[in-house]
Length: 316
Image 1 (cartoon, one colour):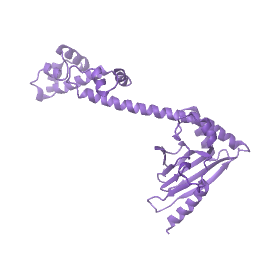
Image 2: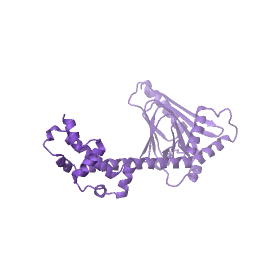
Image 3: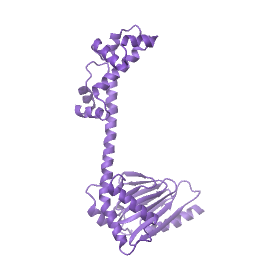
Image 4: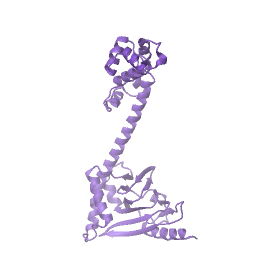
């Protein structure tokens, strides 16, 4: 057995003693192994510090354990990424952690931690029953805590002081349970804030996708003189009001976008010397304008020059 595997096995044994039902796999690069485990206590508040470049750590939840497994189901955890990067996965949800990130994890279900190189994180133990009583219904068993709300900011500040040892010399009997009560009380609002931000981000992503699709539909239908917001909305299977809102969020409107796209296409054709034999009216009709006078007025308003003069200038 090489030195890497010996050091890995020693660390793995210490990890299981500290954390219970844990599985770990070496990394593909077995040149140098780094692994440290330290179980700590702040006046009754327990936390575990793990530093390693191992390939994978898997926490087997109570649901997948056997009767012979010694599984402690009394705790859930705040995972604080101290250095390096890692990926935390549970119940199909994956979270990327960078230094300073804090995530909530309930270990009653399997959880996978993949260090991306050398990383260090701290797991702060919280009483599961107490957390479950206070958590809003329907929240994920895993979630990264946002700093945007007051509760999330307070959690980040408090766990930062725990991890750096700033509170060690000030803690006395009874402080540990009190700190845990504070973290638990703040956890529900912080997770709710994080869930709301995720939903908002997903909504923005969906709206951005719909807006791109709407623009593609418009740009492929510019020759249709009857192109309208109703037609575009029907093609996308959304309401006309929703279509209007997509463009309004960009300080634009559907009708204005259609007209400007037509004018840009007409300007390109007017500047194309190979189309010099086509009249201005023909080019206007090609791009969906049904009234040449209206086209001329709109073109001059957009480009500050009449279509015929624009063609003459670009050809010259």
